[in-house]
Amino acid sequence: MFENLSERLERSFKILKGQGRISEINIAETLKEVRRALLDADVNFKIAKQFTDTVKARALGQEVLKSVNPSQMMIKIVHDELAELMGGDKTEINIKYNPSVILIAGLQGSGKTTFSGKLAKWVKSKKGKNPVLVAGDVYRPAAIEQLKIIGTQVEVPVYTEEGNMNPVQIVKNSVREAKIKGYDVVIIDTAGRLAVDEEMMKEISSVKEAVNPHEILFVVDSMTGQDAVNTAKEFNDRLDFDGVVLTKLDGDTRGGAALSIRSVVNKPIKFVSSGEKMDAIDIFYPVRMADRILGMGDIVSLVEKAQEQYDVEEARKLQKKIAKDQFDFNDFIAQIQQIKKMGNVKDLMGMIPGVGKAVKDLDIDDNAFKGIEAIIRSMTPEERTNPVVLNGSRRKRIAMGSGTTVQEVNKLVKQFDETRKMMKMMTKGGNAARLMGRR
Image 1 (cartoon, rainbow, N blue to C red):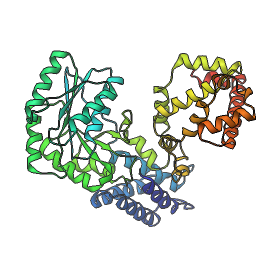
Image 2 (cartoon, one colour; image 1 turned 90 degrees about the vertical axis):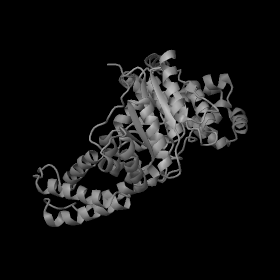
Image 3 (cartoon, rainbow, N blue to C red; image 1 turned 30 degrees about the vertical axis):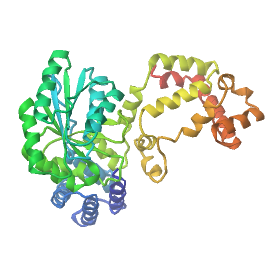
Image 4 (cartoon, one colour; image 1 turned 180 degrees about the vertical axis):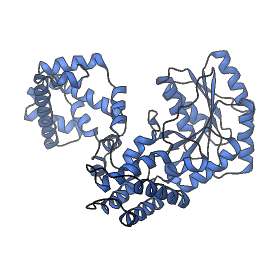
């Protein structure tokens, strides 16, 4: 996401390199390129113009420090304005009631049902809530079955009334049931259409009136650009929703929806979602997204993801094994599993400042560790624990068993040996304790 916009903005800032100060003359070409970059990202024309006008006013009215060149100053101004354009600060969802009723709305195909499951898992694991999912889509074939499957995946119950074609009655009954059974968050998945129509709007309005939700989230497919923004406006006019959810951020999206939607509907983006995995959901932080757009990475989110998978006791055990030179392939594959839990490898690398651009053309997906895992799993317990026994015949057998080559097995063993040596050196130097979070 935003790769093309990031490149275009980077090129526009180069115009100011070598300039002694910002002036109305040398800033004109830069802002022209910034505006073109925004328009190419499918940002609304009026918003793009207003954005560059604001940046120009700030740039011309600001003294450039001697230690900061004009290009750096412009990046800082554009960064701050991008963050402001997307909302400024993060906005929490309202789940302080018992039960808190959350209504999920949007067009068919926007990812409502999948997001409903992700949100249920999020409020359960991150907020300690006891949620229930409600199957309010009675029209789309297999919609109820899809929600049931998702409910099983995230270990959250699903309220259904199969055969009942009255969504208003279903949602009213679901809230009553939640109160009886002690569910404190009710997440209602509603029906969508392929396009906005009056029938759908009347129905979703009736559902809203029936349960008076504490939170209404509009789910929008970020790949649809300005169409998403226009649809959001129509829904907001009828529902007055509380926040936006941008889905499919891992797709071929130019970012126009993320940059425009706040200005058009004056409602915050609360969540972003990518992929089908149930933990692929994040709170939307405008400042962090501005960091990523300008190639600054998002190291804060990366650290937070790492901390979510961080087990203090396991880290201490691992440190002791490293210190005694007992780190083996069992530990190695365990660390790979921890990384995989954090999310898509390419997305994680993109959060590291300066790395996003370097890996943008690389084909790195969730199967990046597949070959490594296959090799390790083809080893015997003795070979994993004591890699020194891996002679030529054993390596040949492992290669055949894992569907790889002997060269690939040799390469992994060599990388493992180098990793173990480096970790032992760090332990001796006293760095491991700091890496494990000890002081």
